[in-house]
Length: 528
Image (cartoon, rainbow, N blue to C red; front, side, top):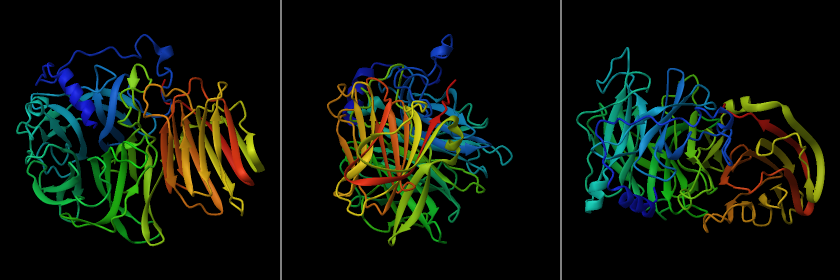
């Protein structure tokens, strides 16, 4: 998390007395007594997860158990500005529709509850449950603001808690912390997983500008194994929210390990972003395939993403979700009641691209269930140059999915793309430059940006297109997510138009472009 923001808030909240019992007066839900306005505020996402009210950032504790996908998240229930962190909680049976549950973990005498992860301890290695009723176990960072304020370096330590009722109630381990700080100021965000090869638990943790890997037979006692990253990868800021998991390379029998590491600042388009590495892991040490810097999302608004654990083998997917914001302006975006949302859940895959492993991502298949049966439009074989308005009025542009399949000109002498526009002539431009060989999202004239001088701008991503180019674009109230060529490139961007975008234009600068097909779908809302 942003250090300057955090330090300011620690001073602001230093007088707050943290209760060790974890009780709190229940706040009235915004839904109570105001059903007609529920999830209808300006800029409120309609098919992405967002909290009912107040501040949210990193997704935490992603775990599947007995038919439910659990989404825990960094949450401050008393303000739309970051404050003493809790774990908010929601569940879903389809990764799309979410049910809000009570706060799972509250701050206590050891500190705030920062980021972490959750697992199902199926064989009860921890002893917190039984093999018939295996415990769900969370591991998280305790952040002690008083120790930090005093100048200590050991204010972040790792604690655990367990649940025996499908995550509805949690008991913190009486001997917390289970992994004490060795004297490093940034020592946080443990991601835990079972290693079938070694028959032990591993955690990967963010430790300032690198990661540490630990092992344990029982989740309570941890042994240091190795570190990675001190001179590898992007180092424009502190490392955060790592993940480590195996993934088979599509079309082969080869399995690689994938490491995700978020970094703030230092992203490819300024501020927060998430890099990844592929390589080998034996339960002790991670060996990368190469030292090239790779980004899971080139946009400015996908950060701290991690993946679900305990997905059934019959499913086999690796499913990812990120925080849809950027620490450069997260605290001041122009939303009311709530602040922040998540990306759409995405399926990650590895493909071989010219001898190198490329991590791709695309919306989970369940997302297709939200496509409206009535709000659809298909266009075929349209050749155009300049700007051409194409979208029918019956498609709700600000709550839609758009699929484009272009055939590029042989001359390829300029650029092509799409424009979202409103009656005020505000426009969001999403394009591909055939000369510079890059994608870009230009939100300089896309609406409200006065809340931060770091918001407006152009995000770019290098990409070498072939003869054909596919674009899958999700638009939801205040965000766009672009997936290029089945997820070989992804860009996520927030946008806050003064009025809703009502026009869709395609453009070609230079040669004419053939739009082979385009599909437009209205997307049903998930909040009622």
